[in-house]
Amino acid sequence: MKVYADNAATTMMSRTAKEAMMPYFDVLYGNPSSLYSFGQEAKTALEEARAKVAKALNADPREIYFTSGGSEADNQAILSAAIAGEKKGKKHIISTAFEHHAVLHTLNKLRKQGYEVTLLDVHENGVVTAQEVADAIREDTCLVTIMFANNEIGTIQPIAEIGAVCREKGVLFHTDAVQAVGHVPVDVKAMNVDMLSLSGHKFHGPKGVGALYVKKGIMLHNLIEGGAQERGKRAGTENVPAIVGMAAALEESVENMDKNMAKITAMREMLIEGLSKIPHSKLNGDREKRVPGTVNFCFEGIEGESLLLLLDDAGIAASSGSACTSGSLDPSHVLLAIGLPHEVAHGSLRLSVSEYNTPEEMKHIIKSVPEVVDYLRKLSPVWEDLEKGVKEYVIQ
Ligand SMILES: *Cc1c(COP(=O)(O)O)cnc(C)c1O
Image (tube, rainbow, N blue to C red; front, side, top):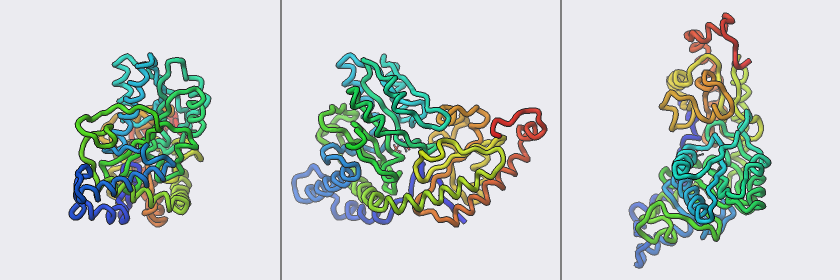
């Protein structure tokens, strides 16, 4: 049996998205900037896609800018807020220690340019509180950027409460909602979000396309110069097929959200229940405040990398952290941020399921993971020390 359980890394494209895209490769292939009808048909498709994305977020179509993905949207949002802040003498930014690297690396760049960055503690449950955000806001704070849902452990932040705090204090609020959009309800107005990043390939759309929502009146800074596309804020001929596919996938995800959330949550609960039975294992992140599909476990005494390889042999595609870090031997910054010691953070497993998975696949996972963990522990000198009592278990 082949089981794809790494939907937080990327998803299969839905048939709806694929079919929506097809005409834009070989029939409606005009450039939206061209004035003849070939171009105008593409332009119409682009604006229809913009309206669909806006509707999914409860935004206005004029507040949606298409990008090459979540990373670009994060970069553009943060740099824009920083530049606007500097003009007012405000160079302090608040974020968390467990953001995606698209956010953390952009913040590092700004640090080198003289900005001050406060990274809030996300606690053992992987959640910050709105009160902590409020306490960290200063006179010179120009931006709060906090992710909606974490990509490694799946925990959801109190976005509406944080939004209310930022609105009250007059500070811009950006959220990287790449793991949330299409999976849980997102409403930029009700949640007082000023800027929001999303990515097509995390909700069964194509890769290499995303969007940035920017509330009316907020100045955007260009990352790419050269043309008047996206109201002059993102130059380059639009990736019309990908944009159309992303909008179709998002529309479909939102339409089926209640149904999918119930189905995916039930499978996630199977995983949590099944894998919690493994001795000296631990579910990472809050038990309740999480997206439907993502679970992350630590198993004491083993290496995440060996676990992944053996699971691959069992037909299971999973991850030990984010796709970006799973090639390296450094433990995940997310697991360290929630306070796990290095040796335990190494033995982690992320499983992320979608509506295309089945309960039978969950059973295969629940059967295979304990076998693989058991096998690896028998080979592990660390495990031997733990069993003999030479070392103490970190996870009871
Ligand atoms: C995947 C992901 C990104 C990056 O999106 P891309 O479209 O792959 O650039 C950013 N943030 C989070 C939370 C993600 O999961």
